[in-house]
Image (cartoon, rainbow, N blue to C red; front, top):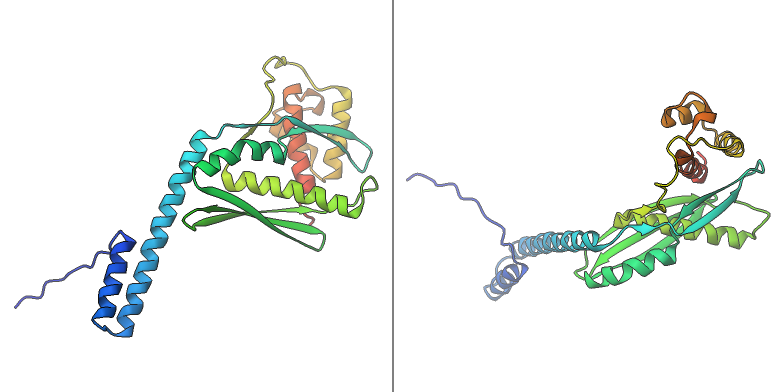
Amino acid sequence: MTAVATRSVEPENPNTITALLTAAIDKKVPVETLEKLVALHERVADRLAAQEFADAMARFQAECPSIPKSSTAKIVTKSGVSFSYNYAELDAIATIIRPILHKQGLSYSWDAKTENGVLCCVCTLRHVNGHAVTATFAAPVETSDRMSRSQNAGAALTYARRQALVQVLGLTTTDADTDAAPDTERITEQQVADLLALADEVKVDVKRILKAAHVERIEDVLATQYHPIIRTLEKKRQEPAR
């Protein structure tokens, strides 16, 4: 007699596994068999939950618009140079995303801790079926004479929460329309000074800026390139010291 190889197929419905478990208990099958059925049930349920989560996220991202950067941050560096950049505030982001998340059975929460002057924030995104994913963002808690220690910690927490939320949801934030700005307009002398001072503060070689801007002199940086460069340098400044 020729032996025929058979391949077991995992049932796709957790209810099927539940029915198998009930039947196995009624027939008093060995404990080892029950354990295998339980493990199979968990695998199928986890796979189904992950698929439902992915479907919910796809619907959320299809409906969620780009978040406008409607607020402006004004920064004064340690060297005394001031500059500004646009960003989307956390409450403005929440106002847009919460109704869409709720519709898809999604919610989020944060957990944070501070160690060695660095605040680490974890944003957890959950689906009603229990599946969850996380994103982590670390930000230094800076010292400033303009704010108390608790205010500095609060500012770092808000910043880290916003960045972690943007990451876990895959959000897109957009600047105001700048199409009216001439493509040939160069940055001002003050902006040149600001770029050089900030680059020196965050220890970024000016040659890297020139290469990224495709120019040979810092004075030739386009006005439309100024704010993106500032944001890049600011992100560098926000990175924890290594």
